[in-house]
Image (cartoon, rainbow, N blue to C red; front, side, top):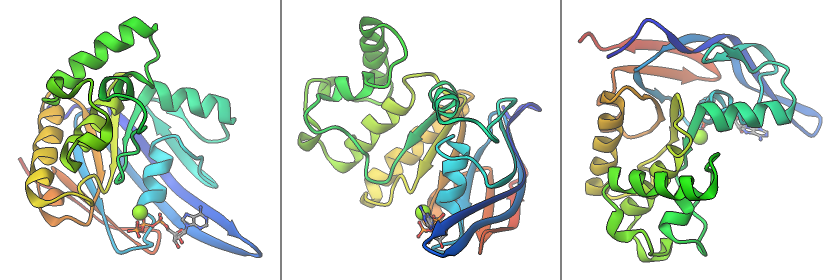
Amino acid sequence: MIGTENTAVAEALVKEYRRGAETVRALDGVSFEIRHGEMLAIVGPSGAGKSTLLHLLGCMDTPTSGQLTINGRSTSGLADRELTRMRRELVGFVFQHFALLPTLTVAENVALPGLFARRRAQKHADELLERVGLSHRRTHRPHELSGGEMQRVAIARALINSPKLLLADEPTGNLDTASGESILSLFRALNSEGLTVVLVTHNEALAKATNRIITLSDGKLVSDLRRSE
Ligand SMILES: Nc1ncnc2c1ncn2[C@@H]1O[C@H](COP(=O)(O)OP(=O)(O)OP(=O)(O)O)[C@@H](O)[C@H]1O
Ligand SMILES: [Mg+2]
């Protein structure tokens, strides 16, 4: 169910990067709200600012100007330590290249970001591995898995701290069609259980499977289409 509460509110977000003497404006006054329980896709051409926006939503960086509030807490002007704490408490992040640690087992990878005492994190990791259908792989190393399985491990890891917001940047970019579909159905299932999900994707099927598509171009929000239920 899509609630009336907001998970994220962006107001006139601007993000500039310094590159030598040059300043790149990656986001140029972007405003929108994400309601609790939504599943939305961010699309747009390369360089449009999609990953930049996802990094801001993921509390990995702060805006140059404008306001971004996640779960009622503003990220603007936060010191690194406070931003890190917000990131751990509120968001789970899934990367295109999975970013699993090769020397750890599947279960250890999932438990790694756990805020809990070690044993509790491992128990929760086992529950999450069951949730993503990979209990039988818990003692394997990442190189023994298929791409789709690695991405499911990465999703389980992103869920270990029970985030309010699950963010994924091109989560099917390195996967074949069948694995991509299994990742999509996992996101849909998590969303139907109430998790707010934001995906950056070039994959049309993935974008169309969401309730809402935000299009960025040149750092600006050029369309925001909600599918009527
Ligand atoms: N760390 C950085 N330093 C300098 N410029 C950056 C940095 N990150 C992104 N940019 C620039 O900001 C703009 C937006 O980049 P961003 O990565 O957000 O685009 P994107 O929409 O995710 O593109 P893609 O589809 O290729 O992943 C680009 O011009 C990019 O070169
Ligand atoms: Mg990108």
